[in-house]
Every structure is written in C-alpha cells, then in structure tokens.
Length: 459
Ligand code: FAD
Ligand code: MLT
Ligand code: ZN
Image (cartoon, rainbow, N blue to C red; front, side, top):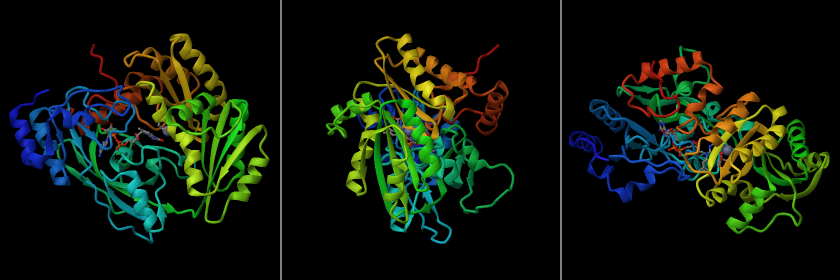
C-alpha cells in the first residue's frame, strides 16, 4: 500500500520521522485484528503524542483525501480498528497521561491511550475504582472503550462506559478541537456531544482524552462458581441473585463445552468432578465481607448442583479464568465469528437453544460457543469452523436476535462486521439521522468511513 510522498512527508512533519511507521513487519500488529478474522493494509501507522499532533495528522489526511482508522489497543472484535480499505492508522497510545484524581468529586482525566488496567491501578492507589472492567484490560484503552461504549463485567452495578463519562476532548475531521473536561455532574447546555462521541467507533471524531467518574472501592470481593444441570434453572438463579444480593457486582454465564475447551486449551484443572450443563459465576463486592450474604443467597437458589467459592485474590482470579479464558481458548481454534448480542431477559433461555440449532442448520460443521454477561442479557455467540467471510452465520444469528427484540450489538459495536445488518434494529429514519450526523461532522469521510453505517446504495 503506497501513499503520495507529500502525505507521508506531511505526516512526518506532524509527528516526527520516528513515529510514522511503514515497515510491514513493524506494523503487522496494527493491520490485523485480535481475532485474525479482519486484516488489511496501510501506507503508514502514525503515532502522535499530543493533541496538536493529532490535529496536524487529521488535517494532513484531510488535505490529501486520505482516510484514517483511529486505533487504541486494537482489541476491538468487530473489524473497526484495522485498515481494511487502505486507511492511515492513527495509533493513539502515546497520549497516555493521567491527571490528578479529584478525591472530593471522584473523577479523573485520562488521555486516550491509557489502558484500562493502568486506569484501575491508578484509581486504586487513590482509594477509588473505575466502573468499567473487561478481560482485555491490559491492552484496551480509554479512547477505544469510549469510542465503543464498552461494557464488560461490571455493567450491572455501574453501567457501560457512557455512564462513567463526564466529557471528552476530541479532534473533529476538520482539525477543530472540542474540550469538555470540566467534570460537571450537571450541565444541560445544548447537545451532548461527548455522549454522541461515546459509541461512535471513530467515525465522528478522534477522542484524545476523557473525564471519567470513579466509583467507591469495595474492600472485600468474593467469587462463587455455581454449576447447574439446565440453562433455564441457571437463568432463574441469575434473576434471583439480582433481586437478593445487594453486593452483587458480576453475574456471568458459560456452558460445559466452553469450560472443557478452556481447561483443555489453557491447561486448567477442572473446577468440579462431574460435568454440568451451565455455569454461573457470581462476584459480590462490598465494604464489609459479603461472604455470609452470598452464601445465604446461594442456599436459597433452586437447582445448584455444585459450588466453588473463593474469598482470596488468587482463588477469585482462578475462578474468573474459567470465564475470561473463553475468548483466548476459542481463538486458538481459528478465527471465530463473534456475535455480541443482547436479549430481553425473558427471551434468553429460548434463544440459547434456538441459536445453536439455527447455526448448525446453516453450517453443520460449525461449533457454537455461548457465554456472556448473564445479568445484562448479553450473550457472546461465538462460531468456529466457518470461513471468515461466510456471512450466512451473521445473518442467521442477527435475524433471530432481531425477531426476539434484542440488540445486534450489546457492547462491542457495529464495526465492519455488522454494518450490513443495522437495518434489523434501526429504522430507515434513524439510519438517515446517523448519516446526516456523519455527513455534518465529517463531510469528506476522513474518519473511519467504512464502519458502523451500511454502505450507501445509490439509486
Ligand atoms: P480498538 O480496538 O483499537 O478500537 C475499537 C474502535 O474504537 C475502532 O472503531 C476504533 O477506530 C475506535 N477508536 C479507538 N480509539 C479511538 C480514539 N481514541 N478515538 C476515536 N475512536 C477510537 N468489549 C466489551 O465491551 N466488553 C468486554 O467484556 C470485552 N472483553 C474483551 C475481551 C478480550 C479478550 C478482547 C480481545 C476484547 C474484548 N472486548 C470487550 C472488546 C474490546 O476490548 C473493546 O471493544 C474495547 O473497547 C476496545 O478498546 P481498544 O483500545 O482496543 O480499541
Ligand atoms: C467477553 O465478555 O469475554 C468479551 O466481550 C470478549 C468476547 O466476546 O470474546
Ligand atoms: Zn463481553
């Protein structure tokens, strides 16, 4: 992939020669997504370190008629963070400063490239917590999680990224900068542009920093893994736990076949001597020890076939590994199709049965892996044994979801992977409004023009 010499030299002027990378070996990790399903080519990966440098890069690309894919940790799972159409990759990870924690307000300003893990460590050191957590924490960035409105494991307690967001600093496609980092809890002035940029997947502006709320830090965390012999009973238990357990912070779900795969591929010991149908991982977190409260909530559940409990960090991490290891273990089978969806609570049990049957009827060689954030109705439908470009699986699964009034994107975004199915869950009027916003903020299609919106069909 080549670019006009004038663009490369404008980019070098903007960020310095050392931060315009073109060597294919060096940039390989920027052009292929985490799953390996999506890969492309780019003339250059550009690594600005300041907002002014981001402005200069955006202007240089705009002047040259080149498009940009903003990139954080490149852990996105919908093909939105890699240059599938020869875009310039704008790597934001050198913007990695953290402002002081405002101890009174419980807020912090983090630049886009700060990883979620670093943000957690930083908040902890100041006696706080950050409300969004996910197993990609070591690589996923503040900018990427704001751009995708990431969810993760603690949504039931604190909400998705949008709920943590008090404002952003961002660079628009024309190089203009908005800076809304004052941290006002109440500010009813006009359109909420920060809220709009959250979840915009790099299509409306480049996020350079975010003002984030922090949450109180629980001092006691207890984790339990519950085994059930039927998915319905497991889902009933999820509802019961939500009703009964004040300290509930996470409720996750996976199946025996996923557990077998994780244990086999990641070399983990099995948690229980016998096999079961479905597993629910529960995390309780509070300022006082929630062990007794959790134990009595579990005692009151119907159909618990086995239980493992961990009250220390190491044991809790080991139990979480059974759930969080799914992404890695499945990827070891070959690039999966990853369909991250939400169902209304009363549709979930039927969907879990129906979706496997449907996928296998479309492709008998497919293997279906179901796991996710049970309390949010968020299932990750992962399918292996299918060619990366076989759209029949996406179509079959997303049609089922839409029929049951679910969402085709719970937390990962639309990206490239699902843009052709947006119409299933957004009306023509809504898509026209999305397009009007895109055209108003980025009339020359500089910023991630190939994600989120479906390709325009011309009459
Ligand atoms: P990238 O992957 O680099 O980019 C994602 C999107 O955001 C792209 O469209 C990109 O163009 C845009 N973007 C990135 N940075 C910026 C910026 N500064 N300004 C504007 N646009 C930008 N997601 C969840 O929601 N919940 C989970 O539990 C979860 N678990 C995961 C576990 C694993 C093991 C993996 C690999 C992924 C997981 N994800 C999860 C998906 C992924 O981590 C999130 O989507 C995350 O928000 C992406 O952050 P990132 O920094 O890697 O962004
Ligand atoms: C998860 O919850 O583990 C993630 O969203 C990643 C995935 O879907 O694999
Ligand atoms: Zn998830």
